Amino acid sequence: MAVQIETGRPRPAAGVARRFRPDIWTWAAFGVAAFTTAPILAVVVLALGSGVDVWRHLADTVLPHYVQQTLILMLGTGLGTFIIGTGTAWLTATCRFPGRRLFEWALLLPMAVPAYIIAYVYTDLLEYAGPVQSALRELMGWASARDYRFPEIRSPGGAIAMMTLVLYPYVYLLARSAFLDQAGSILEAGRVLGRGPWRNFISVALPLARPAIVVGVSLVCMEVLNDFGTVDFFAVQTFTAGIYDVWLNMNNPAGAAQLATALMVFVLLLLAAERLGRRHKRFDTKVRRLAGASTQDLPPVQAALAIAACGLPVLLGFAVPALVLGRYALRFGGGLSAGDLLSHSLNSLLLSGLAAVLAAALGLLMAYGVRLNGGRAVRGAARLASIGYAVPGAVLAVGVLLPLARFDNALDGLLRQSFGVSSGLLLSGTLFAVLYGFLARFMALSYGAAESGLARITPNMEGAARTLGANRWQVLKRVHVPLLRGSLLTGILLVFVDGMKELPMTMLLRPFNFETLATFVHQYASDELLEECSLAALAIVGAGILPVIALSRTISSRRGEAGP
Image (tube, rainbow, N blue to C red; front, side):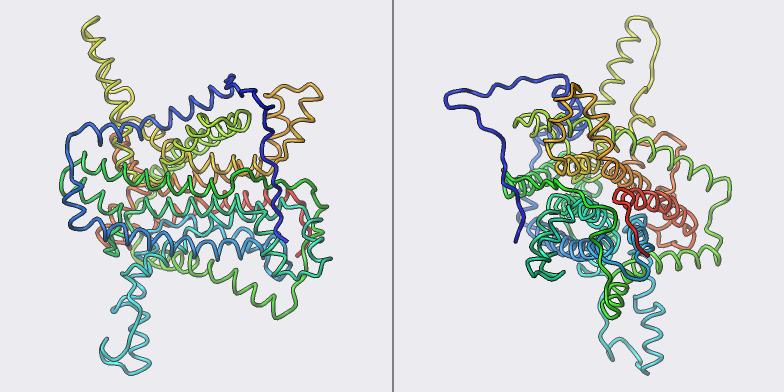
């Protein structure tokens, strides 16, 4: 009993052409899209206008392997995060079992752990000289690695496992919000028709939550495409690793821009295929249940399995890395003084906080403009503005530097010629440049959260408000924003936590003597000195804990859940 409401948009009468009549909201959406797309277009211009062609050499050597390894990582991580994120979201949203309240927010904790940090931690634990294999050899009496077989952590499978452990919260967060917003009467109708919890989940709840789940998995795939630290440490040759290799080792920015452009085309094709798959479909939830009425108690055996299913991702993705880092910090002192820790933490919080709030506001503005005028032009501009998340941070940073540097140089030349004074670097090499890069990079997060939230609001509610005399600004302020509170907080959290972990753009665009926790951790972790940066790594993790708890409670309070 898959519930998909096929509505589509009303078609104009025969012979009547639908005119494109942009208003202030449409132009605002275009403006936000143009602002965040400019760095991407700068990379494309560099790729097409350089006259350098590295495709023939790469196609004959490593490009097929890059594509193959990238697809393996995307498929493996996407499947793993879908299973863990959707399954745990359904359990915590619709079932009652001991510890559910704890797991509601604890399942989000791994997203505060950088992927390359967890890769270092588990490599230290699971490699041949690590404590796990050493204990096994001592327990079983094995003399060398030839006496037993142990999974190799530095492999594509190991990279998939590491990324899955820290990226599944993207799917969990959006899927749980969608499950909480679903009409309980629809789910109960499935139960009345004789469908058990499993069949109800597969045929009713999952199709209704598809937009949110697809957004979550898409964000995971984009994060996989962008990752460099994990795949570089595990020696997995992905498309992104090839871009960095051409950029840094071959000293060929134009060639790297060409590869980045091909990667963006690949992402656009994936997004277009998904959009085509749910064309003319709406996923409205028109009836809201009373508080806590759709949750069900699990029998003891099923409750134990639910606890294990929810506890294992938290244990492996957060508890074990945090304990290892805490042990290193106590043993080695963390390699950071209290003053430096406070300074780096304030820099990280300022940068990530500003980026999160600005991205949420701009993402909502663009999503609302797309909703009001769903023309192909404005929708295409919004999609284009969202692919920055799939562009490697270092390449996108160059796209930010190009227009800002040209503006600074043009302004400086004008002032020198007219007044004999120099303006210096007003934008490039400043905090504005870093914020600009963050907005271009993370717009997909805030826009995706706002768009998925708006998709769950039936147009009838907006029409009722307009009938009562409210203009579009009042509808947004009084109707949409309260209903989108959970989705907006979701976007803010995603941008904030990702901003705390963002490394390549921060390193390339930050002002002089501006150090963040992420840049400090990378300097030591890249030299395999994880013990020396453990305190700063713990600070990154700790900065995401309170927002995670606050967001989970806010989402849960929208339904006023009751239960243990």
